[in-house]
Image 1 (spheres, rainbow, N blue to C red):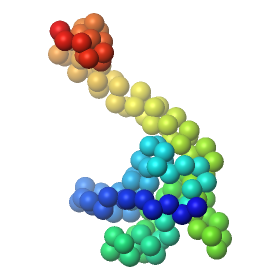
Image 2 (cartoon, one colour):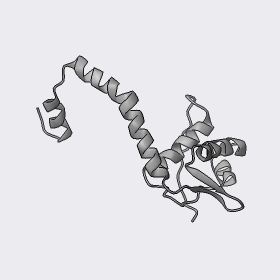
Image 3 (cartoon, rainbow, N blue to C red):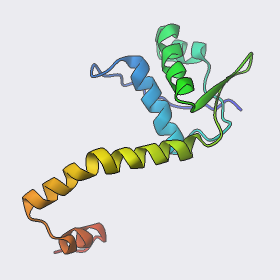
Image 4 (cartoon, rainbow, N blue to C red):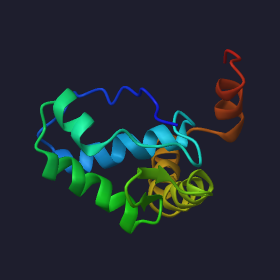
Length: 127
């Protein structure tokens, strides 16, 4: 099944376009816009629609293959692998807990925030 997906071609200069393309596909997998077994748009289709060099698109897709999130099916295209979202969620959670959470905790402590205050905010309660 070929999906019509919007890759939101707002490319920025902070990183290469192939990496941004890879990140956009990862986000679509995490948000279940693309599900296990779904076909990615063809390299030619993405290149034409977003005025990209096909080699740029191929490089972004190849990163997904190398990360075992997408598989190539000869003559048929590229497809989201079974379990891709589960693997991505596991990796994103680990990365958050290992890399980002310690920084969040440090900032909470610097600001002198209390757990109760944070839980009230989380639950939409006023202080």
